[in-house]
Amino acid sequence: MSASTFAPLSAGRRLACAILGIVASCFLALSLTACSSAPDLQAFQNAFAEQEANLLEGVALDDYVEPSDYSFSFDLSEPTTEDGVTSTSGTVTVANDSFQTVYDVTGTYQDDTYQFSVNEGQTTPIAGVDFDNEHDFGDAESELVSDNTCEVTTTQTIDTWFATISFDKTYRYEFVNDAVGSYWSFAGESVNSSNIAYKEGALDGSYSYTSDSMSEGSFTTFEISNFNATDGTFTVNYANSYASGTAQCTLETIELDEDSLEQAQNDGTAVADAYQFHFVGDSPEDRDVTIEGCLLQDDNSIASDSWLPTSDFDVMGYAQVVYGTVSGTLVK
Image (spheres, rainbow, N blue to C red):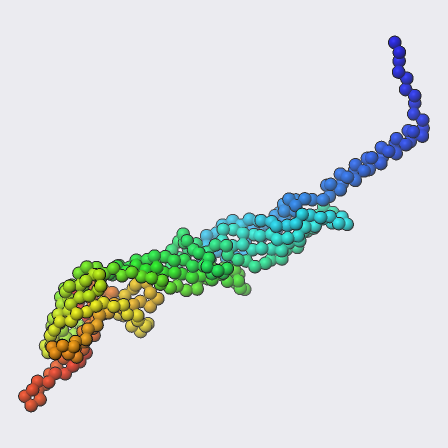
């Protein structure tokens, strides 16, 4: 049986091996240190989210929108290291369901410390309004029509004693950035279209004056018949002490100013309209007679403002009539 024999290393060779071991350990330590001191992009994002968490409170006010949580989205460059400083730059967007704010960001890492320079940019809407309590709608399907404007269109119906009126109303909002903050602001409304469905026979019947609305030459007969719900036409048989006749009338929508609201129907327009009829006689029996009226909001009520004979007098044996205004409220 043989035994292996190992010759002892010389002192010089032992010293050389020791030096090589030390150098290898230093390289390994330096490599590990270099790797641990260069954070990646995710590390920068995590550090930003922790240091700048207050940005998640949002900039915009919640006027007309349901509150929702904000979150970060990052668009930062890959980190680079120079002279012991690792840096990245780009934008960070803070957004929720309604708004977004874009920040210009520069981040650095040195001596185990992250630092960020954050500059706030413009806040813009990414969705329109959700509700408007003043105008009585919620769960709105609003539409952004420009970068800072949205619209909500609702269909509404008003029921009157003579018709059902449906219309589309559009509410407009503008997004404002001012000293108060960033927020939606109501900017106006408009009626886009309307449809009037008259009620068959709604006007038909005999009308008489309310006790306080009689005038000289007041109607003794005011009867409406044959009201046509399709085109709004009807017949008026009228009489007073000095004249009588038949008038063929048609309801028309008349725009009113703010001084005439007592004649207005609430039909969704900004200044409500009046539903008026007007007849001018041209036959020998009713020449110069005007039968005119306006439907009132009170059920079965008409405001009359007609022109016809209201008195007479005798001139050398011939009866002469005097025309005047016959006004008052007639109720069926």
